[in-house]
Amino acid sequence: MIPVRVKRVLIVITALLVVVGASFAAFRWQEHFPSARCQICGRVTPKETAFQRVAPHGTLRACCRTCAMHFMINHPGLVRKALATDFTLNPSD
Ligand SMILES: [Zn+2]
Image (cartoon, rainbow, N blue to C red; front, side):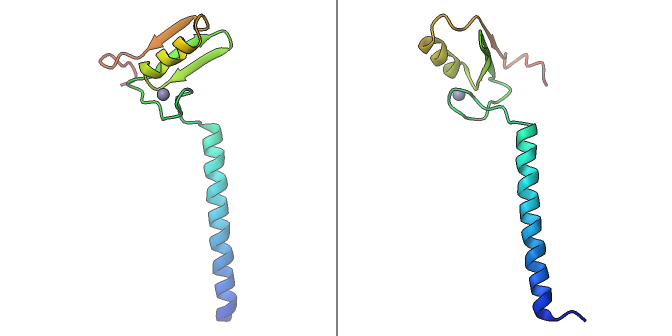
């Protein structure tokens, strides 16, 4: 028979291990599958309004055409190509 005090300690240790393990798993998941965030405003990018700009240093993602336009206005000549998602013809649906 395990004393009650030892049971409590084991329960606390188990709970701490579960919390630490879940946090580590969430960190690894986020690192492996980063959410699509707007690189201008930081909000989540909805697939219906996603906007991509191809620049010399790589592709940048925006959540909407407004963020994309702000980037293009503030960085004239940097964007080589812009790809907007058509809300009504979204091929991912
Ligand atoms: Zn944005």
